[in-house]
Image 1 (cartoon, one colour):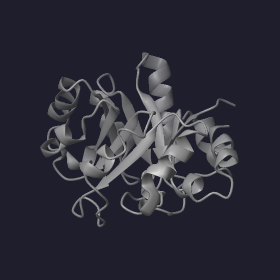
Image 2 (cartoon, rainbow, N blue to C red; image 1 turned 180 degrees about the horizontal axis):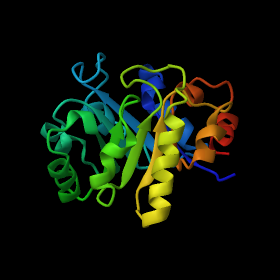
Image 3 (tube, rainbow, N blue to C red; image 1 turned 90 degrees about the vertical axis):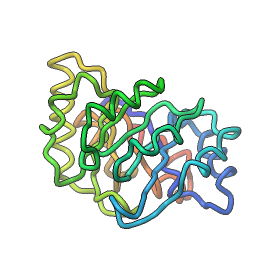
Length: 216
């Protein structure tokens, strides 16, 4: 069984002590920090903007994995570019011209990710697979933390893993939603390389053990 990397979502952290929470989890062996940005339009909830993310710049030693759950993301992409930002991921469903948005992200020296909702077929990304640096498969409906893992994400992960192997694509396969120590093996076995975990890490009684179990 392959090991995976982990990207804890700060959405599940204690915002009264966000810096301390981030410093704590990154001392326990994480690869990325997942930044969930919600606009109240593309998804029902509002989370936070770039200033909250940037407040961690002096604390975070791992790169940012930024997930923009917002309509027309091109308007805001520049605001999330920092020395810590490695990936900016947009939603296929939120982009009117995905080719333009991918070019926009790349023009800023940032790797471009694309996410699909649970109801979106994996084939929709076929025209761009050679241009995408990260594919984020949502295993819950975007916009809420603490939801139950949706099994229909597993065939999508397998699809992108097969496409990558067949064509030599360079993207990383990521999954987000309802994943913890008890079920992380399911997505790892399907080919996931990066796992987003929120409550399963930040609210764990033993964060070190939770991270180890999720990574495999």
